[in-house]
Length: 158
Image 1 (cartoon, rainbow, N blue to C red):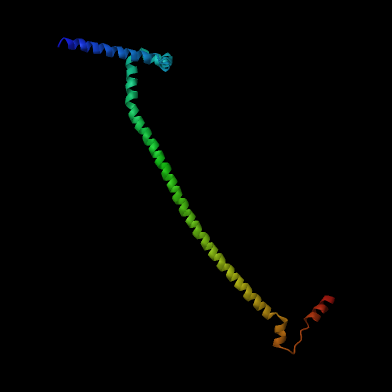
Image 2 (image 1 turned 30 degrees about the vertical axis):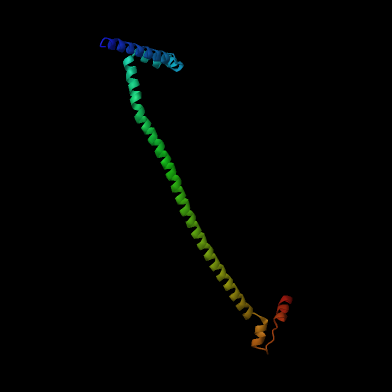
């Protein structure tokens, strides 16, 4: 049994090696990989395998923090957008209520001013009609006749 284990292990290792070589060949035959390897950066990394491994490890290790940062940026942007919309809604609501109150006050003041102006006009016109009416002059002093029309005609002729 002990002798069967090493041969079984070596067979498993050979199978694993065969699968890995097939995976590497399929990776190397990929059109994007071939295009990258023909570029100057790909040729430089092909000549410097340690640097290529370092870049690969750096990219893999930095993917998680960069992903979290991008997630944070997206979430804070969404929250800021929602907050701005809510804040804008609040400001517009408060502004609308303020405008409603101001316009209501302006309407009330205009009604009061119109009423006061109308009352003043009616009182003033009544006083003017009472003071300068020909009837009032004749009622106060019936013996005095009004010669206003004859006086005006005399002035006109001159």
